[in-house]
Image 1 (tube, rainbow, N blue to C red):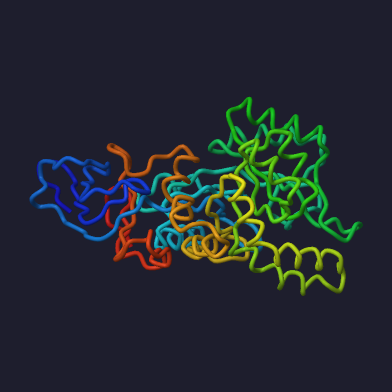
Image 2 (cartoon, rainbow, N blue to C red):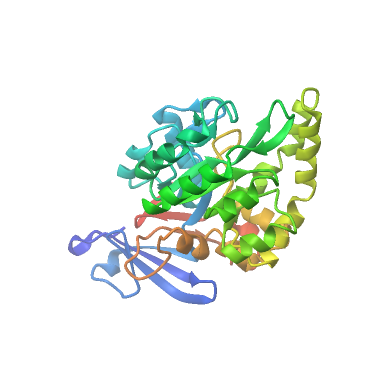
Length: 366
């Protein structure tokens, strides 16, 4: 990269996908920012070629978390690097018990939008993941995480109830309404983990902004989501694990196991019905619990398999996802975070699985 005349310059040449249908021939990364004008020092700049997309978004990811709870900094770094190598340069961290603020000081690691720590009902979530509380404390904990996060709060909306032997809603309607109102007052949006059907109407009517997984959407709740503009992040690469989960719990919780299998069987129909109704759909992998990091390309391919058009599935991890999260794509002056591919990903999203170059803050990384 050129450092002539006191500037760090990189040239990206080929096909720059500024938007779904807006293509330019080149861009320049000048001191980490995008420019479409040839800068001083351009003659000595390194040039990379190919099809350039904005850095991909993984809108449901857990850096700093594994299957047992919080991880050390070295493990969190490996997780973030795996996401980076896959082209995921913007992560909405949908709940983590670890303090990953140190990542913000690393120009070579993805940018993270944090939702604080999960907030769950007592003994109604994975051990060592969440604040486990009772409904009377929900507003206070939502306010706490709203102040600690980056504009998002994460609730656990449903989980297995051992007495019922199946998934049930975790929170009474009144407490949810008050908690979401408090988050909004503090400038934060609220999302919730929801596998099943039961909790969805209350959460949406209470004003929630997003639902994770959303496998329990039905003909009755899909219009409600569409009317309110509530987004979903289906995490289909995670939903693929439901049959194994069901088999593991069948002896103790047969109702739950059967329910999980039904949710899995209709997963693609659910996502397509949501998309067809106009519900915003975004890419998220749920990496960091039992899943490996770096699965963003696989999730885009799953959305296409569900029937979402390829260009819309790309937008769900690129231009549209960045707009939803309030972050720029490849606009003039934006951070130069982009991924370069050998072929046009609009023609075949499987191209996303093999980045040629990853550029973060105007530097070639990886």
